[in-house]
Length: 160
Figure (spheres, helix red, strand yellow):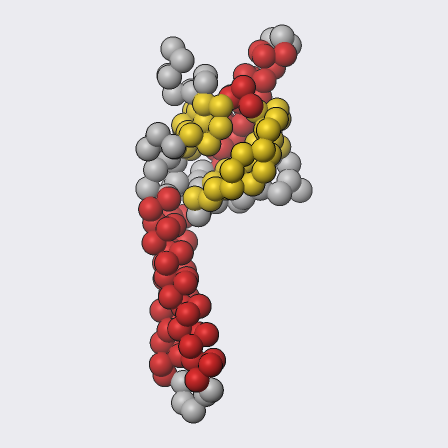
């Protein structure tokens, strides 16, 4: 029962494709412009090539990060690969409001203790006592997970 998956957030194929495609186009365009530019200063060409290559590295990280889904169990919030974002007993609150500092179509999880910095582009990030979940994910699945976590918090406080 402890490892039963209660909610799942999967990256949607269309959002993932658009994100990867847009960033790939940006990276290729930057490198192409650097090589295609006429008598521009060498330093600007190097900067454009470096920025374009950096964007292409980010594309690969995005592709790998969005190949997994996020799972909520009674004991932890984790990736389907097994990487743990946090334990559920560390969660203090959930924020899905319009003005919350959260990814698109997602939620903000507040923790009781600070965690190491981590980032899975397009899927989640962790900074201090906050975890932002969302990006290329479905808003409906994020809402369901937020409601499941809220119910868990209410049960922990004895409100249900």
